[in-house]
Length: 536
Image (tube, rainbow, N blue to C red; front, side):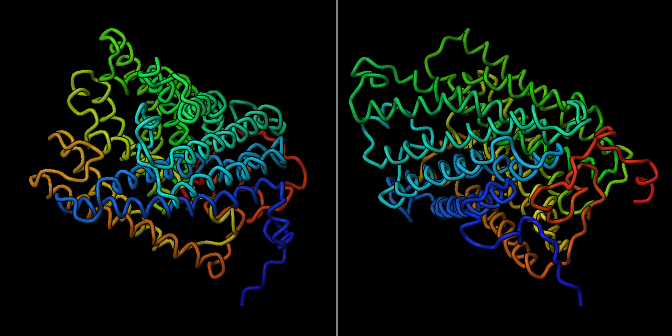
């Protein structure tokens, strides 16, 4: 019988509830976020299930139009603001950033705990909106509908998102200061893991972009409560101003969601190819380029919103430009696989799925950056499919890859590799069956956010709902075997994947202080010797 693990680590240092709720250990705070966003994911998924069931038939048989409006709105709000945005930064950023750079904690531990409480307060306001009737404006809150016509709980939701924004700002600020000031001796900028580069770029967007959303939501609140003429044309306001402000944040927010997943894929690819990443500097700098260019393309969401043809042309060119650093990453990941000793453990399957799905999402994004074609497919299911290929196919696949790659480090236990591979395949197949038909639906003219549609679209909608069922099964299986692994899984060593990086030099789970002595970095990142690659 295997002996019990008696080492003192961050999980068994103190089991009291108070010790968790008042902890300043970055690893425990990461787990608090993990529990919180998992609950939000389950809630958002429930809304998605009802949406797909409604769309099985063309007649709107399950729910009424107002209820359907609330379903897709709450699905978007919960999934974007309370799952996708905080998923990797709040969970794995919190857990890994200090360990990967050789630090014992984040720069501001108390601020880190505060960010979780702020997140939970914001989530509470939004959940109150769900309980008291929901929101029907769409997750974009477009004015003047959100400020004058909607009778739903817009204010509660706006307050929740406003509060949650401060959680993102505090987290981003903490990461930036930590990466600048607390790197171990020898950990130069060009020796940083690519996951850290991705977190750094993401943090810049959080700190610079989130205040714009907070200000926008606050102005929406003032107009709805006090009747100020900011966006309402009847009061001298400009509803297009809301779109400019909203998308100035919300397009960079796409990269808050997907950049961390790119960092995860870089770590996983190098590990299971047993090769140093091809073009490390290009992959690192491309993260910063994505963060910068992401602030310059918001207008491509507004090609049909009265902006001039010349302005739209500029945003079209910039939207094509932002695809270049993303393409650099995909090319370098592919080149890293070339002549590598590649193995296909579950994290690698999720990473490969990310590359395939993100590539499709990126290419269809170029369609939407083209003026003529965007006018045709604007606000159709083509946009829904593109968005989900980036967000679900990209961000969520990366998140699942991170869960499976670092799970042994978080909990010191392995999971069922066979079950994890089945889940990865089901997620990939189910996702494509769910969302690829929506490209066809959009091109044929089915508008988004409609619960009644012509009968000729039913076959494609039935395919999409079938795919969602397979996708849901792929998501539920990990909940089973990961929960099982917490108590029954085989114990993991310090480095079960034989990966490079400081986090794999600590025990699994890591001790409270991470390192007994501050490590000194002497090697380049991802230094996999040739002999090891040949031995795998």
